[in-house]
Length: 360
Image 1 (cartoon, rainbow, N blue to C red):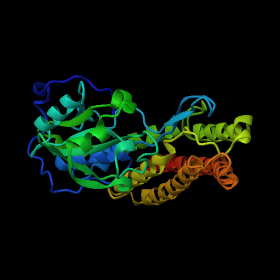
Image 2 (image 1 turned 135 degrees about the horizontal axis):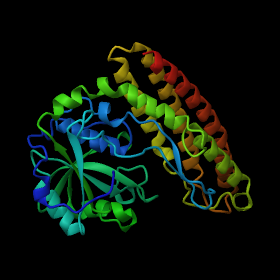
Image 3 (image 1 turned 30 degrees about the horizontal axis):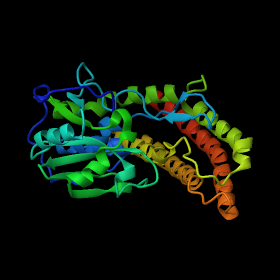
Image 4 (image 1 turned 90 degrees about the horizontal axis):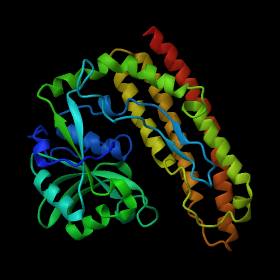
């Protein structure tokens, strides 16, 4: 969600007031960052947050390493919202803040998250009971705080895998938000700053900018350098295959390890979010794009399977449990093959989208 900055309450004077907190059960598309920001947008009166949030389609290797050395991937670039200013601006921007500690975070939420305002907060899934990674892995997660008092915090999490809405005490909230494992994301909050004409501008943004967005997506996914797009998916598949064939894995396939490339777990959700974005474009008078939305949804299910196989390989039993070791091996060895199939499918969709956009 971008680099946090120290901001005073006075710096937030332009944050929208009059949000109808409690009138909405939240935005449930994309990953947890999308659901949190989409919920803020919905509460601010933006009817279709997916117009602004889910238009990017990319895949990038941040640094080409072996799996053992920490291979990692990214499926985003830049800020999550279009720019607020300029001819293509939406009038909506994000305001980032990082508190100096838990007491300051709680005081900030008590001052900012009340009827008429909402705040997105980053927590650690390890301590968050509804999360898929509760007590298994330290994974950042974004949710929305709609109100706070001296004793409690009202939370709205619309991410489907961890959906939760309710009031929690400060002790419980501290387990979620005060994790050293979050690093720079610890005590991080995000709010919206909304200009007076923002709702009008954002309502017409998709119609005016969708072609440019697709062109940039096509360029990103067709990049020939090997570190971006379809070529990067294929490179990740090859790196995984190398690791699975190497001595470290072969010697002890059942050893419990925190496997890298954990963002596989979000790629299916993000691709489904982009399919929703394409469906929105199709509804603007371009019905030919509806078929591409369906194809992207189909690919998203393959990403879900890859994530499931990868996570199965991370939930192994003791090293002496041969059945668990065999499960790890069988699960993980399917992932590189599936990633090559996903890469081929995404290449076909990108090529077809490129041709369709040129003739639109």
